[in-house]
Image (tube, rainbow, N blue to C red; front, side, top):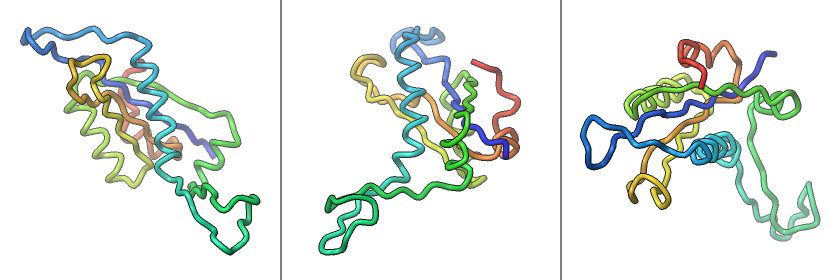
Length: 148
């Protein structure tokens, strides 16, 4: 089973004051956003369960984290963690990738930065993660995007 996760990074951010110009975003900021996307796929599938008087099947605690992972996510987690980073230039392109991925039923996580350290306080869509899922299903959506 060939399974991977693809991170799609937005590369260009319009300058808030100079139309037609773009803001340079720190490399560390982009890396952090990509990491958020990769993890959010899994956090979105986790739920804290209160076991109350029942015995938890996984621990002695009253609470447990329960996740519903797809078989592909389980295989990826136990395998090589194959991850590919590609890019788009605009927010519109990023949102279209998210739309297509969700429409295909793939695990998808869009990251919107809060804007506290960059982007002049404006929440900004920076990247998304798709998968872990079958490579062939993700490639239909991201296969033509350039490597980051």
